[in-house]
Each structure stands twice: as structure tokens, then as C-alpha cells.
Amino acid sequence: MENNLKEIINERGLKAKWISRQLNPPVHETEPSQWIAGRRRPRNDQIKQLAKLLGCRVKELYPDYKPQ
Image: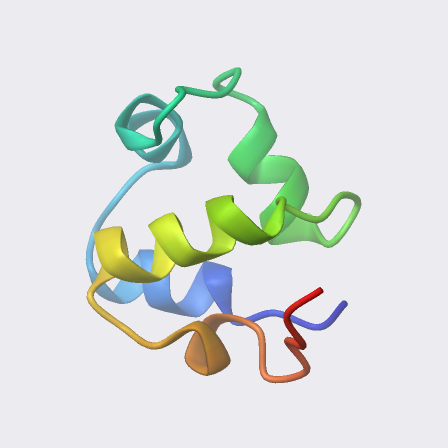
């Protein structure tokens, strides 16, 4: 799934490790890096949390996002 995580995270000067700790429940510190690289996809609830945390819309993070 195509994503814009890397660009948005870099624009805000954030680190994947910090993001991993902000999610509820927290994820392993390497998990956001997997999402950024496109090797894994966060769950829908995590995508929504990411959008809120990063101050953007879900469609900005994942243009092809379709709720399941």
C-alpha cells in the first residue's frame, strides 16, 4: 500500500521510535520503520491514530486507504 509516511514524518521532524511510543497500545520501536518502508501495513485503528498524531488526514498518509 502506497504511503506518504516518510515525507510527513520528516516534515514534522519526528522519529519512528517516538511515534511507536505514542500509539495506544504502543508498538515495537521498529514497527513504524516497517510501515514507512512499505514492508508492513498498520492496522486501520493505527492508521487513524497516526493521522491524528501527525495532524493530517488518513488520505494524506495512505492515498489508497479504504476502511475495512
